[in-house]
Image (cartoon, rainbow over all chains, first blue to last red; front, side, top):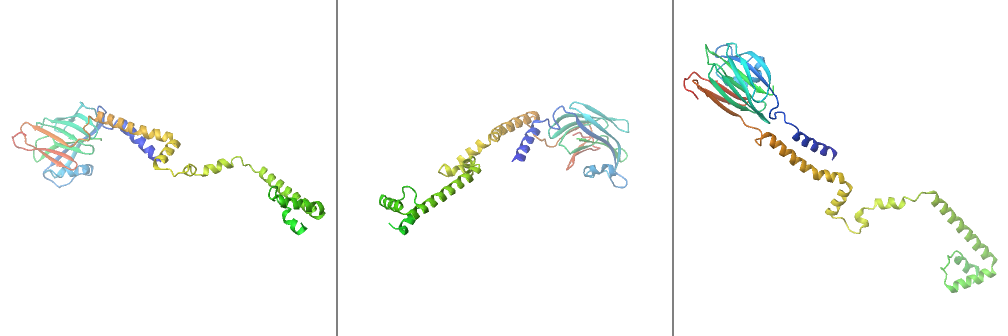
Length: 145
Length: 160
């Protein structure tokens, strides 16, 4: 009986406490820069194994990671991401709520802008450059590190 | 009355004999020294037994005896009727007042917590995947995978 009551009070406390993704709370965001190739030995490097499900859905067969950053973002903050080609991609955290984070990604290289809401554990893979010579640049964004 | 008839009556307690038997026994005892001696022995023995019982009783602490007995008797038994569910509930609440108060407060706190939770999340709850893509001169393709969206741009000059 005492354990049941302890669990009930803890549940109430958890509900009352601030959620991990509450509004205005800093959100750890992991951003990676990838290059995908249409030609070459098919494969995903060991460091990109967590992306295999998304990368294998594209026509690009070989992948390399060119950069990575960890950013602590609050809603409204824009994080510039430099590409090896000299371009810059802007990643803006628009909103962070319990259960979802919304990002805006602006890629001048592909003249593409996206607004994506993803739940925790999901990540965004976005092509940020037009394909040139059988390869293209991508960024991956995941909230929660 | 002879000694054989008087002997069974010697140990009688006061009031046990009817007046006739009492008178006959009294008359016999007045004339029979042996029966008077036997009566004297019986009375002495009875006194010893009584003293022994009193001594043994005094040695024991019986002050909590009644409370102990009453505590072992269920409330439903000494009230004379079996307790119903409502009576048992009342008895439980009387014995566990703090628990009863907490039971009354807990749903209110849970409702308050839920209210605060909904207020903080804007009432939307966990959001589903949402993707909007605009591209000036390249075709955009969105692949929905189990790990999240994949946004690709094609070489077409038609915007999306």
